[in-house]
Image 1 (tube, helix red, strand yellow):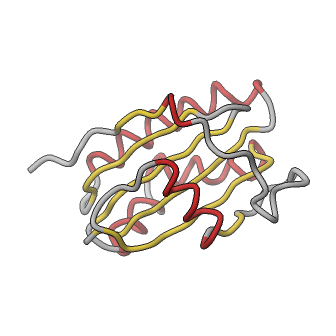
Image 2 (spheres, one colour):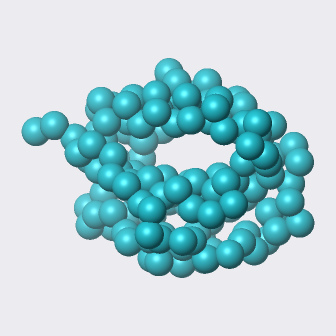
Length: 142
């Protein structure tokens, strides 16, 4: 079984895309090298919305990644860059597909702190994800 971590982030505007892309690439690379990382996927959704889902050996491994390096630096910027952000966690055999990730986010997810929340932010009242542009993160070695 794996500890699954799911995030959904919507940027407030195009001006935040370059910085977000910089940290997204670096955070993806960091994740694929992190102790306890098993697998991951990204989804470039509509309306400047981005999803990530990762599988970890346990919660401690995921938390060590979240609080280190480029990911930690990115987290400090997301409250300003995003008008919607949410996270969900659960235990499962492996990564969910995007419809299952959406269901989990709506049922057990929680909004993250953002400085300029959209009207839909607190209720997680977003459009279903467009699932045709997903990608895989590198699998863990070994």
